[in-house]
Image: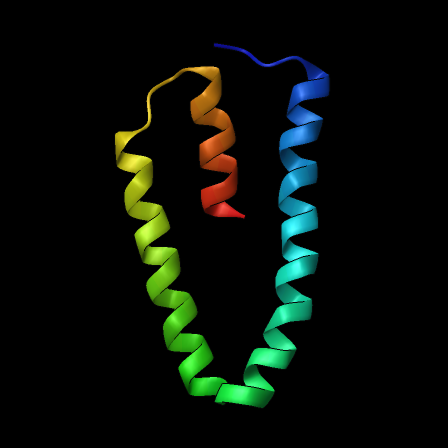
Length: 71
């Protein structure tokens, strides 16, 4: 299934916004919990989100879920 240029732009826009928000939260988290804990926790969370990609199909909703998982 192909997405329109607009929907593709939205998908990449979501990733950009989430990356900025994660950067803002990461600084506070490192100050509070330390770099090692934040790194281990974020890698664990990324691993879980990557595993969710195994269950996705080729539908439109799957594209949005995949975008959130890799952002």
